[in-house]
Image (cartoon, rainbow, N blue to C red; front, side, top):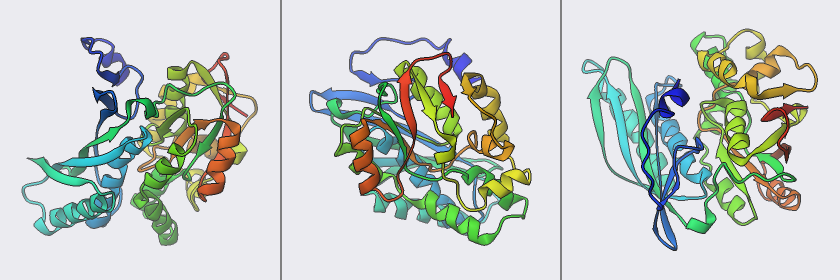
Length: 318
């Protein structure tokens, strides 16, 4: 729906807008000087875990991720809060504490925010960072011949759904939470040491949705080796048991038309390719040699495929 609506929104040319919404990138980038540009993003959502403190911290890590995906350094954040008037003040305090401490970990200062009365709790941040105009890691930079490296495991959406249905093993929930709390800062820093060509973070649209955006923006096909993908413990079992979030179904309906599969995959594995992630990993396109260096320096990073000349489909599953 958003794609259709944005197509009718007026646009005005500004030579200082280095990255806008036309390529569905992770954040906008605005040039201030020849050596300095602003990175701006906003993200908020409903609780994904039961603990208010952890929810706030995860929301912060998720919002910060968009800046890291652009190769930027977060500087300031504005909190966005929707909370019921009859809600428990202690819960709101814990949400804000979790977010504040995660922002402090990222050396990002909270400078204000806005709150509204809403029966459904929502929380997140608008984050501003900086990047050198020549070092932007846009999703439009993938080149044929590049390797694809991913920095986290998939399955947070399915595990969160299993938690809501009370069928999740607490050990699996704890591992998913630990991953969602992990900042993409180090992945960004290691990426910037190399000749990375393009990057996006895999969040609400799932791996296929964000890979599709990268492929279309770059004019290439992303060939994903499904057998290389790593999933959080329990995710495959919960997907097999039918713990499928609504966002996964929406992602599949939207993006599956851009996918060419060279063979059949187990339904639960295929489903997880569309699983909406929270505070997911970075999908990075970079030369083969640099992919080896990245996976050697970043323990959780692993190859998932390669970039090829544009074919019949934006995504090819092999």
